[in-house]
Image (tube, rainbow over the protein chains, first blue to last red):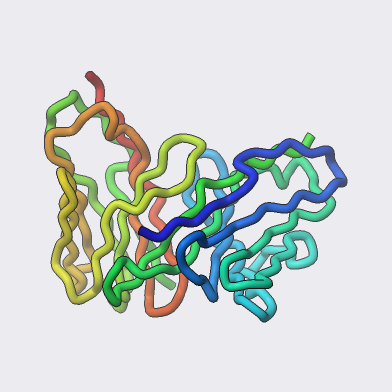
Length: 118
Length: 111
């Protein structure tokens, strides 16, 4: 089946620094990837849609200058949290739309990245 | 705007019980519905994917049904095991768009 690899799985950074998270589709091409954020005991909230070769589409309330998204190839999207602050500490998960072996589309998720800003 | 509701929010059962998790959505114009499992601190694992034209999907001890007209889906877990303990998320998509998630059902199966 489709596999999405996300790295790192966890990261601790100092306040004011930037952190990059990678999301790769391993055995399929993904023209579109999605970035979510999840707070403790909450469901996933979509942050942005990453489009290969073009600008990302951000959800309302998400700062595009703070959460930089780059989708330079059909298998890689990156999320950079710039000038991180403690309130950015969260669980970030990416996903890509993939086929289930037929013509049906579903979504495959990465394993997530736990970001802690100190 | 699509809204997805999952009931119950939490469920605790003894090992061996059959159980049902419920999911409802407000807009029946969906492309598909997907059930996921999430273990603490981990990403999401897809369990079952049901296209809007389908009524149900089965995988091992899991069976998911979809009643699109009434905006409901159920996930049936047979002969539950402690390893089934996790949060189960229901999500719907409309066409080539992202998913709308419910808040999940936290399941605990005790030995």
